[in-house]
Length: 66
Image 1 (cartoon, rainbow, N blue to C red):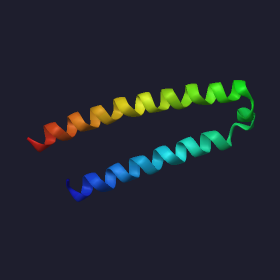
Image 2: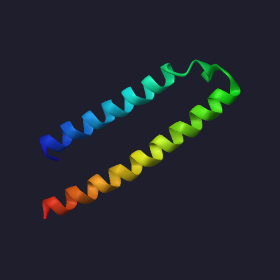
Image 3: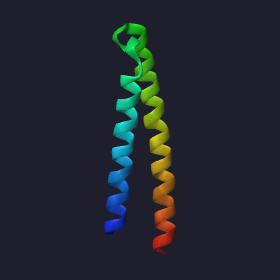
Image 4: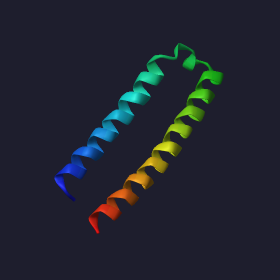
């Protein structure tokens, strides 16, 4: 793996961790069962779209490496 790819992937993961942490801290109602269910739903959506973006980035990287 190229150094640029390693740095980009680590920055992306740091951004994801900061986003999830900020989201959790901004919602005081997460201590309730309804809040927890909403959190799990939102985290699932976040991970789903992150997965889609990762596939798109991998596809672009594969084409650039040809």
